[in-house]
Length: 76
Image (cartoon, rainbow, N blue to C red; front, side, top):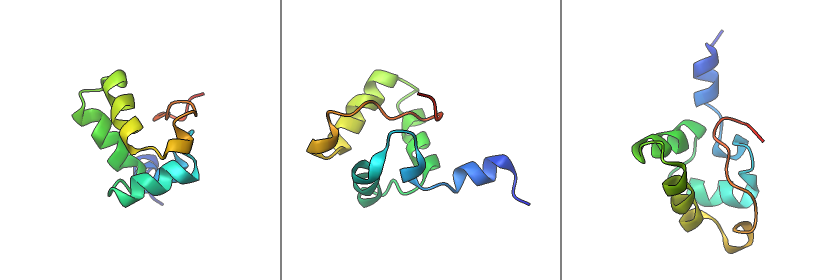
C-alpha cells in the first residue's frame, strides 16, 4: 500500500483545486504534469504566493484568467 505522500505526489496536475481542464492542459504542455511538480515550482519561488500567482497567470489560458487562484493544499 503506497504511503499518503506517495499517493499525493502521483496525482495529476488537474487534481489541484481550481486547476480546471484548460489550466491543467496548459501546465502539462509546459512540463508540469504532476501536482508535486507544481508544488516544486512554488517552493522554487520560496513559497511567495504573489510571485507564484504571477507565474501561474503566465501559464493560464486567457479564458481561465478570470477564475480564482490555484490552491496547492486543496483548500477553498
